[in-house]
Each structure stands twice: as C-alpha cells, then as structure tokens.
Length: 441
Image 1 (cartoon, rainbow, N blue to C red):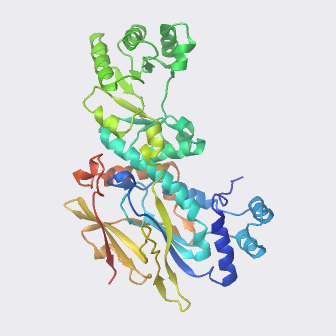
Image 2: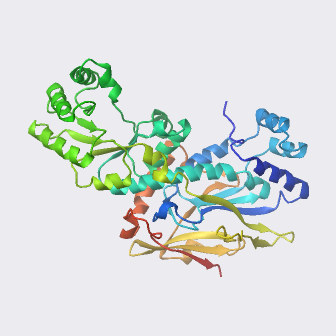
Image 3: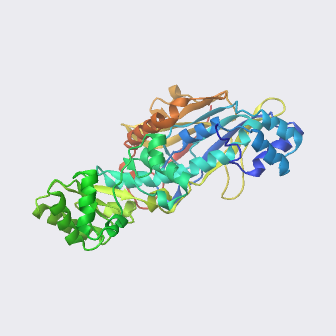
C-alpha cells in the first residue's frame, strides 16, 4: 500500500485552504512560482534538483482515512475542508526548469497553475524537496568542476537523516558524482554503488596483514585497501606484499593529503604497483579537491560537505503567488513588497540567451496572464528553459525514476558547458550571468 505524502506540509497551508473554501476564493485561478531571490554563499550558479522526486511525491499526495482522521481529531480544519480534502487530486499544471538545469536569482524554477485550492497546499512539499536537493546539487557541481576528469563518490549517508541521505545521493549524482555508498539510492535511482572496508575491519584482525589478506580473498585484488589505520608507509608495503602489484587501489583517510598522496604514489611506483590507484576521503569539499588538482590522486570520496550543501544546506527558494484572476475573470499580477523579500508578479517565460554557444544572460519575460506568454520562436538566440512537468493533473513520468535521474544528470553536464569560464571559479562573486526581466509586449 502506497504511503500518503499529504501531511508532509505545514498546517497553515490547510488553514488557508479552509478559509478560502468559506469565502469563495478557493476556486480562483492562480499561478504560484518557486524561485530563489539570491544564490547562497556568493555562488555563481545554482543547480535545479529534486524535480523528479517531487513529481513522484505528488502522485501520492492524497488524504486517506488516516490523514483525515488526524486532521479531524486535532481540530486542524473544519468539516467542509475535510470533505474537500477527501477527494483532493492535483488537477492543475506545472511547468519548470528541467532537473539538472542551472538557475540564477529570480529564475522561475517551478510554476504551478490551478485553482488556489489546488496549488497552495503544495508549497511546503515543493520547497522541502527542491531546497534540499538543489543545495546538495549546487555543492556537488562545484566539487565536480574542481575534480575535473577524476571520479567522485558520494559517501555522506552517516552525516544526514536516513531519507535525506538517499535524496542527497541522487542530487550529487545528477550534478556530476559517479557513484554512492548508499544502497537504497542505488536501488531506487539506479546510481552505481561502491564501498569496501572501514578502519574497523583492520582493527578486527590481529594484524593489518590478516585484514588485507581476508579482504583480498573476499573481494579480489581489484579491491581498494585502507592503508592509514596505523602507519601509512607500512600499510602500503603490506598491501602490495599481500595483493601483488596488480592491487586495484589504496585509500587515504587522514593526514596532509597532498603530501601523503605524493609519498604514497612514489612508494607504489617503487614497489612496481604503477597501476594501483589512490583514493582520498578525508573531509573533502570543493576547496580541498581543488587543492589536490596537482596531486597524484585518482579518486575522491566526499561525505559531510556534499550532503550538507558544503556549508549551505538550503537553496533559499520561496513559493509565492504571482498571478490570479480577479472577480471579472481578468488576470492580475500580484507580488510581495516587503523589504528585502520583494517578489515580481506575473507569469513568466524563461530563456537562456546564448552567443556563440556561451550563456550571456537569463532572460525572463513577464506577463500578467496567459495571453501574452513569450515563446521560443520570439527568442531565436536563446534556449527555452521551461518544460511541462504536469499537464492538467497528468504527470510526465519521463522525469521520474532511474531514467529520469540519468536524464537529469546528462542535461546538467551538457548545460554546464554553456557557462562562461568565470562561472567555474569557486570564489564568492556575483552570479555568472545576469537575470534580465522584460515585460511581454
């Protein structure tokens, strides 16, 4: 039996719904928009992630007997609202940036169209998914850029809540990581899994040599041996003596990594193990990875930094009503005007403006309603950024599951190539390209 996702929401979404049902505004056609006012941490771009997960969660956004009983017993909503929720199915439409796409301040990452009642209850779910996954993907993309052609593995499950860890592994994979230690992420999203042994394996045995021999007997000589439980130089010597010069790899999880990696490479080559790879896994982030660019490292394993967004665990996205119909049926753009939290009203169409294949701007065309929405044909030097994710309640399954995840990864790696060189720097700066808002004609 499928679990409902309907209570993964804030109480005030349902109290607003109840009030709207009472005053007659619940059926008013509305447009909500999910966007970020700024990029976290002075980063130069953000990465959209979580869209496929959100669509799957939307499929299960149903109020069954248990959910309705909880709302009734807790006095959360009145009888009329309970009756409405009993039959709730999202029947609106959702347009948005493809998963893996880059976004900038003001980019209309997700546009939700429907009645106020249809759309308002999705706020918390949409934000919780995209804020988390986009934060992880943005950090992961920066790490992927820093790593260059060297592969990355996500190893942060023990630093996150259990299901957040699965989501983080997916977001990291979309943004350029090649594998994960998390088996559930492998099963659910089709991500390659990896992992061999921890320090406890070595400590379990009477000697380091005993541990290495047992691991080789179990996993073969292509495995990676963890050589820093005791003395690294002795560990490397023992590893090659036990496994031979065909040992797949050694892993370093401590010490001054540039210095240690260089010494280990020299030692391996002197022992004849010229093909043995070096993996490093000690508290890496994008800056540490960049600092190892000139070191003889073959593989990176990243834990805490990637699953926590490398210091910025949320993308800071918001979900705002930007247009609605008035009592006469005319569309009206609406916007919040609070200091430092202003939004821009109107439905939006977004394009990536390119010159010679390089992005120079994010162009966002704003209209009050639907009649003047800009199309790709009007922007021949641009790439349209929005796709239909849900059409009048029908979810596009192409964005879900392992296939959707792989597609998002391919899209991200492709569009990252459009960015100007300055976008690839790790230092804090303004967004790599500006967001230009223009009014529809």
